[in-house]
Image (cartoon, rainbow, N blue to C red; front, side):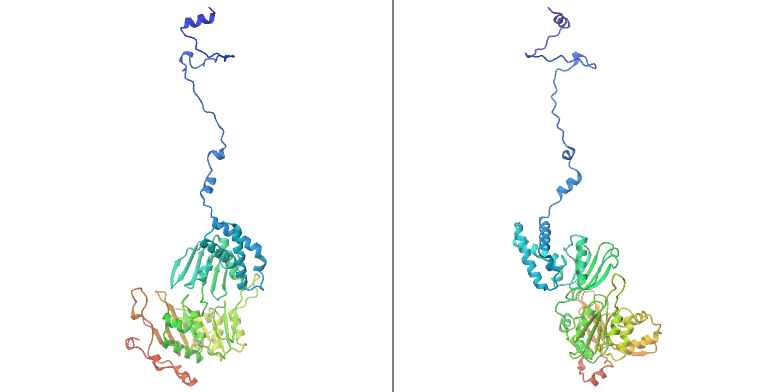
Length: 499
């Protein structure tokens, strides 16, 4: 017996059964911390370790957020179509010899071919929407185009790129229209102002402009507009409103329309007074429709808005300073120049500064029948407002002299207001009678009847009613052969004692 076998017999252990191998594995040395007899005969099986790159083991936050963002296939297709349209028709967009209608027709035809080439399955509705959206972005004013085409919308207010309000029937509502970015909104603003020769940038961050149809535009960009660029568009009707429309709207009555018609033909100087958005310019357009066809009319405005229907009209528009701060032409300079143009009628869109003194002087020096508007809340406030504007002319005139100028120049003040039900009504037709001491005396010919109350929908039931007092300028009507029905000044029996 070998020595190794004797030792195993002495320890009382048996040799492990080993499978026959060609080369037996070398014996492992016992652990220093555990004795050989205490070691477990169980063999542990370990899984093979696979090295995984950190980027694939756990997705990063950026990767996870990108994976969760939906891909707007429609927006990507719209962007590609707009880019392709610019590439194919870029030179024609800047060609002044091409008419607007021809350009739009050819652009839509080219756009349809571009969309067909994309081979993207679209429904008829999606295809029409895509063509319209791209056409609005390239040829129109982006998301504002549909609002401009909606006849029910009277005003558009863009507070920022994703907040657009509109006014419908005198009520403000938030729309679902959005600009894609601040740059998109800025491009639309620049497209609007550039068409009328205006500019907007950091050196001139606010501007008054107009659209092709005469709609009024005001834009303000940062740094003045803190929350992003702001845009306000006051739409004008493509078809000018007539006096019949205002009668149907309840803005005025047939009797009042007859009186205003006679006042314009008798060459009375008329001031239309009202607050912001009350319809002063619309009413001024209606009054100008009473002007005779055989008279020369000169209009003076900050931005051309009046829709004069007569043929013999000269339109003058003020000009802001250029980038060097030069070249400005104010309304006051245009008003002075108009006196040398042999005008029969001078129509000033709005007086808001020193030009009011020149307008009053023109009214007092043979240019009767002039029309203008002013911001105020009542006929009495209109007189005070004119006094303040005359003082802005820089002339050190005594207050009594200014009031004498107003009393001598202005014959009639028509006050228009926007009531809380959203309707626009003429609330006063007031005659300026003259001076009593240091006070300009006024006499109402028509006032709005608030005593009629409101209906179930909150709409005022009242209308402008005559006070029963005949104005002094009726004698002028008789001298000029202008007839006004006596019933115009007949006060209703229900209100005769209240006025």
